Image (cartoon, rainbow, N blue to C red; front, top):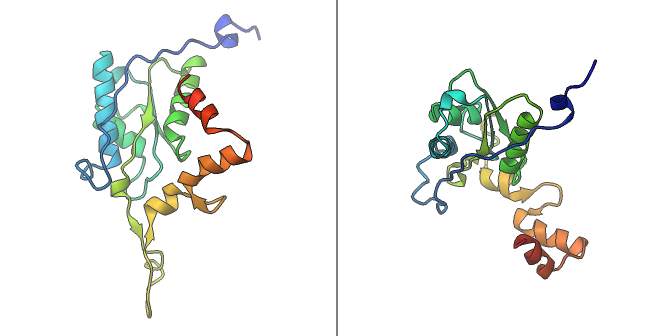
Length: 190
């Protein structure tokens, strides 16, 4: 089978619209909005700024880490809320802190490979709406004290591999690989 130029050379990818919600504080002014609603608002704004009709979108890839209590298929909920047709394939990605970036990478690959032309990608989160878990409730809590587990900490802010807070991970990595603060700053401002 002969290869065409398109099958050998990846297509160029162009970002045509961007948007984000304001950054809110924990339990602050945006805390009444679930992540899926925040995602819908960002998607709708990005499409509007780019003058792209939602009916032209062929795929949605959206990152979300703290999905408990959002319901099924958070990316689809955000897409539908932004007016994207129900027929569009939607995928929710969970790569913890890199979820939104991984969603953008997957969207770019879809375009590069010629699978799609118009893909929406990004991420959505609302830590304020992350529930606390009562692990023993399903089994029937009977006698004695029971504990609530903070879903935000358990599923978002705790590194299960090193048993420490995610805030410590960068420092541990820098120490292990002997990366100075100056090197980090230089890379950041590149």
